[in-house]
Image (cartoon, rainbow over all chains, first blue to last red):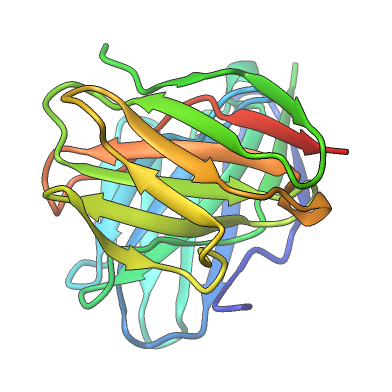
Length: 112
Length: 113
């Protein structure tokens, strides 16, 4: 099941710089997208979401961009902080189902 | 901030044994879920539960699996006869409304030997 893909398994960014995490999807029925952050030995923590009727949603340092024609979304974190180091999961679902489809995750490391 | 709590954090069982994974969702939430993550793989949906019944389940959720909300606070996942391939991290999640995001617990690591 490759409906949601995160092609970069890892990303390393210097503190203060922008982190950009990418996600691609194949199912055109998806209409709601979420980003979760996960620390080791913890469950995923919700970060930010976006509906398919929007192309941008911002919450503090986190902004999610959605390009429906390209079936692509991205999460921007600016400025990046060492505490942002975690695994980031993209997830999606459609109006006719209750299940989230997750990507494989991108491990972000923010170094000083 | 309210949390979803899961117990135990780690469960070791022998193949063929029954296990019950326990979860206490956030108290005013109405929608309940189980997901799992096999080591190195994606987080996968297992089942959703609303109004005291299963609302959706994946093909993974076969007859060996069942869920129950035995009282007003607990939500359990039972695996009747565990297999080696059931070894995974199992996450419980809940949400208050249909349009709100899921809140996950910290998971139960199930090891089947």
